[in-house]
Image (cartoon, rainbow, N blue to C red; front, side, top):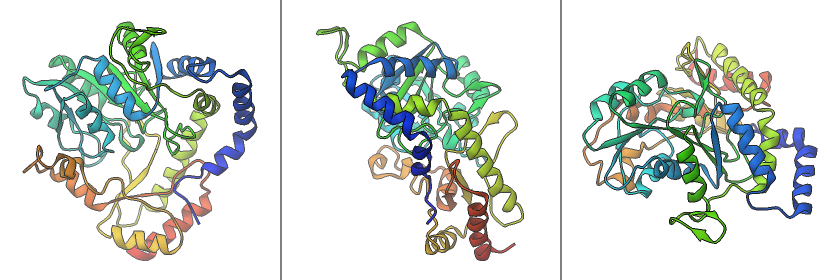
Length: 365
């Protein structure tokens, strides 16, 4: 059996450090916004090159609170991608704003800058690109579009911790950004967790209130907020993993390059890497018209595989009324042909060769 991601191997490597930290936290009885959360926030801010990092309960909450902190509200339009997990659009809907879905780039699967430009209206207030599968979006063009049109830029970094563009970390190039620490992420907790980052002192102060029931002084509530605090136990785990994030990402990159080299002569489209963004391979996602045949062959050999994402957001029932008649041909084609292979730092070259061997038997050379 080859799983999509081997969390057991990762845990075995850092087990002693994590269990010691958890035991100390239990002994100290400091469970909510304690010293590990504060230290993790500082360490993340330093790593990402941002002024403020605020731990929250999930990646979805991170995007939700980031939108609120940037002043996006009811009726505002937020341009985003339909080829992503639904949390991206859910966060927009939570605040009464309108997600405007536009098509994606056929190589990177990220939002198309040209499509963003065509979708801007007087109601547009923000753009939310997703750095999908660990591949940074075209932030140079998107940043310029937002500056020219006076739009807020909110990065969805749920899949891109450690990815960068021309030396700048994803999350550091917009007005604010949201990260997810779902267990399977490149930097993953042992449950849900999230992070909002910003360079703005004002936004950071508001975010700290929003995550903690609208309070900055205990039992004094200036606004209506939320209960969305990163758990102290999860911060212990994340601090241990943060020290190793570059190592983890380099391991993923090595596995991805093994895959791509071995499949170079096969009739299949492997992930695209540009020459200015660093891809951290949260997923290794390919395109093939023989997807179903390939996946069946892999599953027959007990090799995990998955489709991210089979139904684009503009075709989901949750958006069928507002997106009625909307056709996004690149997104729809990618969704019909994409599939992802196992990837993590602990996948051996022999396992990669085995996986590629199965694919080769299906589609030939």
